[in-house]
Image 1 (spheres, one colour):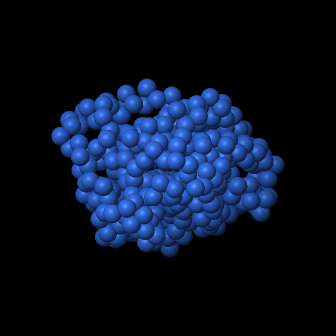
Image 2 (tube, one colour):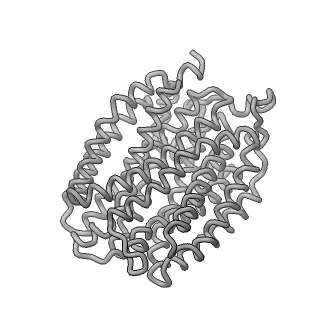
Image 3 (cartoon, helix red, strand yellow):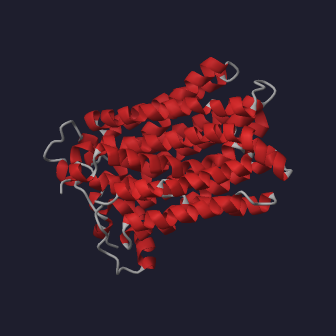
Length: 417
């Protein structure tokens, strides 16, 4: 069976839906920040720690759970983690105080990294000249999940409260299991199941240290995700604050800006396929830099601010697609290990950004957060400039014969220590 037959449009949409839903749960604390703070009797600044621990848990889970894809079938691992995720969400809905909430959302983050298992699996199932588009489709679905989930969570909280909202998400995770298993029925099987688990984790770390393309691509995107989380973690505080005075539901609807940006992200994948990952990633980063600077001038004007955040969010997710394609193309035979190391670094940076945002906001409002974002994107551009060329940087549509071998489909079995 060819890669094209393994991953048709229907299956790609099913996997995209699973990615969107499972990533949305780690952003629940961001969208429900004020409700959780009021219910648990803490300040919004203290409650923002929940957003950080969910992101840190996500990064840790990537490092220690995603490598299990070389020992278990993708379908089996996704099923187990989906049920574990549902259980941890139910626990989060029952917490009595902020300390137990932090532990619960850390556990949610640990098992919520299902999309990081599905993305490399989908790329291996995809035709060679469609991998940029496939990756961008799945990356775009993450943005749809993040912001669609934010909007839904905010609206549900006004109707049924934040605890019942978390229960709704737990039920939705269970409901998506059958369609995800169907989409993965032709996934390539693992072949290195006898390798000790400890060696898998150590091999992942070793591959990261020895691969400068991976490290610099991941550090570049870590700065981008830190910027993204810094801004969006404080978005509810800014919109519901004295300057804007929006309700929680209205602030949640602002997430539709990010949702629309997510729908546009697959188009970025076509640009990456056509013009190369290096060139387009640099363009996305410069667009994001301009958007961060524009926040200072537009943050009190709803329409202009919405346009700027749309552009910034689209550029953020497009840069993720470009950086990820470059990282995986640096050693396509070991794409599973590379994706694990890449995602761990990126989401660890995102967790730091989630902590940085409230600190900067408490100091000098959204302007300080945007200024920090400018600094982070400049650091990202430095890393982008220093990344050596990869096969992905030469991609044209259709792919040239010299590039195709470098992007050949791989399974986790090929990942050797």
